[in-house]
Length: 505
Image (cartoon, rainbow, N blue to C red; front, side):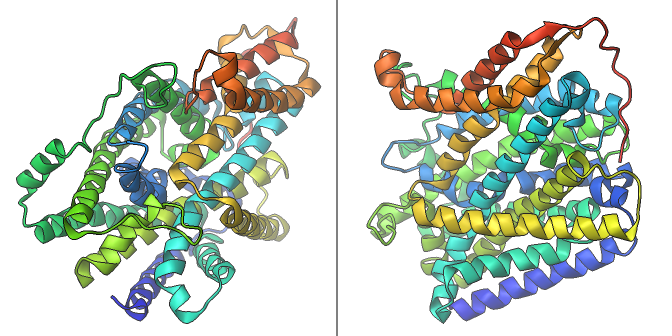
């Protein structure tokens, strides 16, 4: 399909998003509605929209690509997904009740109450850095596809493509905030879900297989291995490492992340928020399994049609490019359009949500916004939103100069280092007697030392730990080191008080 035809469909999709943003933002006149949608969101809309936010373009492209990677991934990622499912349930039953009891807008307000001001600012800073990097990586993936298959045709530089994408996202999120995000993310999840099932249909049709025959081919292909019990010490794919990594990365990247928790906090009450999380968990596990099936079918299709795994300009294998290569250059025109719409929807659903959460956290945690709806505070919120858009832009440009790995791997590696201290902070706050506090000003030092030690461990684990190789379970080690560091700088307090509602914004 020609780049011009693909571009015209994408422009039409963006116009729909901007139209929805206009309709949903007409009554947004204050910061409270921007941040938490008036705490009146429908749980089923939140649950459905969270699918698009959580999966992102990384799931859409990188996970199918990893199925047949030279490292022999197969369906091993599903072990991690099962761990994620357990993590979602823990978030719904432990963290959500805490946040609702405190009636917070920023979830990091809990750290201020429990540990102190420096700890609070440290936790919020970790989120701002982590989410900016993570969202940049996710958007990067869709931008390089758009660049390769559309904008290179017109001679448009990569940085201009990034800028165009961010300007569009900023345009439909700047005013409406969370209320707009919940509606647009629901639409984008529809596009994402429809695309994965339709792509399976189109690949099966091209292979001359019925759906049952396709699943039988996947089962017999060698790509469908899920559970790995190889050497625990040297294998990254061992089931215990993947399950533990999935559980704790989910707790950190969802339960301790303002982005996804902000949507849950917009529900009317804890019952609806938990109903949202449980529903979302089931859908997430199921749809991720279908993405893995897409990956197996892509490699089966590539083998039958003599298609090689694409490479980048340096000659390095890029499994991330296999899905777009087949969808855009080997399947039907309809399949190409569906692929591009699904990819765009999944990536933009993640970025628009992240920009809103970053704006909320900075305004509440650092600018101390209260319920004031003065023109100054609303105008300031606009500039904060634009500022984070610039931050994402610069991060993507930097990442493009150094990355050759599958984006999904990079995201979880970075998350292990950046979210680990959050895991330690919340664990200390929740599980250590409330009459024991910390030397607050020392907390930032602990939260910097912990990922530094983990980085050293990761580089030298084979020598220091008898050949042990870390994977996503590194986040647990990171959180544990932070926890021990907080214990080391802790001290008894005569009176801390009981949990009471924190001022909302």
